[in-house]
Image (cartoon, rainbow over all chains, first blue to last red; front, side):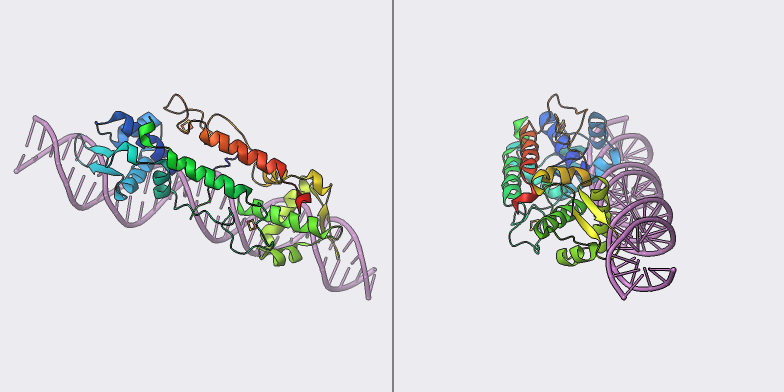
Length: 132
Length: 132
DNA sequence: TCTATTTAGGTACTTAAATTCCTAAATAGA
DNA sequence: TCTATTTAGGAATTTAAGTACCTAAATAGA
Ligand code: FES
Ligand code: FES
């Protein structure tokens, strides 16, 4: 059972966690609660949110009653942005595998997978935290 | 730089190698030549072809002048079949991440990524070795 | 001011997948 | 029959992701 679309556990945690936070606004949520709700590893989630915080997507507050909250409007946070912070920057190019050198003149995927990669990219770009 | 579509190096080797073999018919090709042409790891390619052979896609012959050749018509070998042998069976379902339990009632990807997964699936199914 | 809570960040551990290494078995050709 | 070539298959290694652990820093509230 394999996934055709590449989304790491970490990116999934970021996406799910941020949706929860967006829905829960204006209240903050802390890692413990988030992990419980998502039924996920607390430490992993903490690491992921540490990165989201460093990237400026969320604001963090330490201490009792601390936690995470959005650092900009839910309308302005796309799935694409989240994905690229946690996994990595998406490169759309000639070959969906990112191969520069291939025995074949033109990519054996004949642009079909490029079309689809672009589709995913655009879809991620359209999806916002405010959709929930 | 991350790939949106999940295709392992092994699956890529299988795809590229089989296309070469298909184009080279009716001559056999051995691992050494294939690896050189593809500029790829010889041992990895050998493993991949061992699996393709076990799965019945190719026929192997040992010894001098041995190598691999297709075990059925190039028209009857789809990219999907190759992909599923090397990576694994594709499951199209509710959630593109294959999550059974999610905090949210409906998958946060709202069927968009399912549409795309199905698109990839159908595209892989359409692409055949005889296209080259 | 002190204490409990909570994030930050570094290091270490675990696990699964990808890749390599090594030896055995098959076979064509001398 | 012998040798060189080539695939088969298992074991070992490497790599990357995920996960845990520990200490420090911040801060709210008693
Ligand atoms: S160039 Fe895209 S697969 Fe070879
Ligand atoms: S159910 Fe698909 S992502 Fe949560």
